Amino acid sequence: MFDEPSHDAGLVADFIAESREHLENADVQLLELETDPKQDEAINAVFRAFHTIKGVSGLLGLADIQKLAHECETLLDL
Image (cartoon, rainbow, N blue to C red; front, top):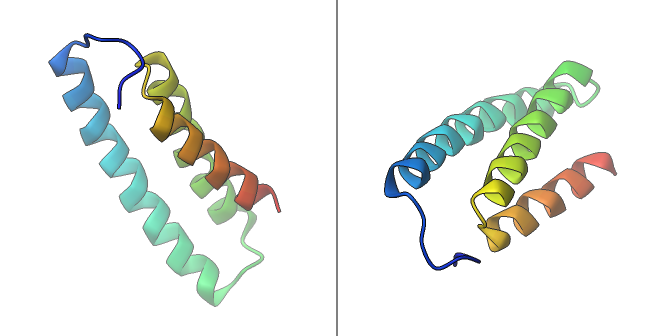
């Protein structure tokens, strides 16, 4: 799961908590998009959530999470 053999457990725990918040917000925004798919701000909010997760997971060496977040960004671009 990790690219590097050791990670600060506190940083990983913070990343998990922050990522959950981003995903919860993205979920709310996706529900908004179900009713109005043209809401640019909702699309941007979902994109920002995955962009942040991608960036922080990259800093922590969590390559699989970084790749998944990147693929989510790609889908949102479409």
